[in-house]
Length: 298
Image (cartoon, rainbow, N blue to C red; front, side, top):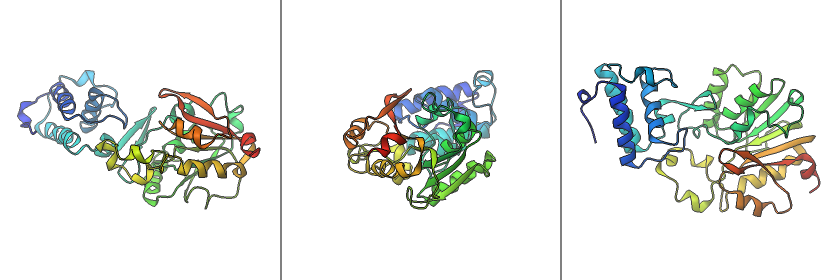
């Protein structure tokens, strides 16, 4: 569906059209926004180089023909090709942080991000004494950067098996000038991680179970499937992460893992542990914690 650019004159016109277009196309929202209005506003503001959180002052501004054409192009690509908005714009926002994004790494998103700003309170007693953090499956590097901000005395080893994802992470680390705080490591989980002990091991790993992978909305098919698929029950990598954590944690350390909608599978995979579930906006069963003490006992 293509509309001539001269049909529109203002961002208000484009916003109305985009919302209708997205709703009619039945696009899926799961990569930053959760509704057609916010998705449309993000694409419009980004394309026009306007403040990403201030649409109202510009709603009735008259736009140039080339500006209208560029916005319409993104609207049609979003509706027709189902490309996530972050890949169309090259940027994603997560709790006030802007990250570069492209198809080499999954779009930055995580329930763990909500907990980082609070320094994982009350589960981390002395944030200033947290000096060593390991992040497994870092992807774009977004959580590593947020943790470097939240824990000012910490060094973060951020690991991913994908060289492509690490290239995206490097760009984000460089943009935040975190080169001295974050080391990016190409490794299959713990295999090439330095032999040091960590206060925290944090991971948002691939956890989508095989049946759910078959039903993913088209938007997710633009992302690296390696970063999504977690095996039959979604727990293939989670099992390895839990199994290797004990010998990598300091005595009072903790492991924090995001498992999305896979709480039932996580509980079934680890019946020997009493998992501590951390509250998030998505529910109290999306992120679990195990202490070093619990892990050492098994």
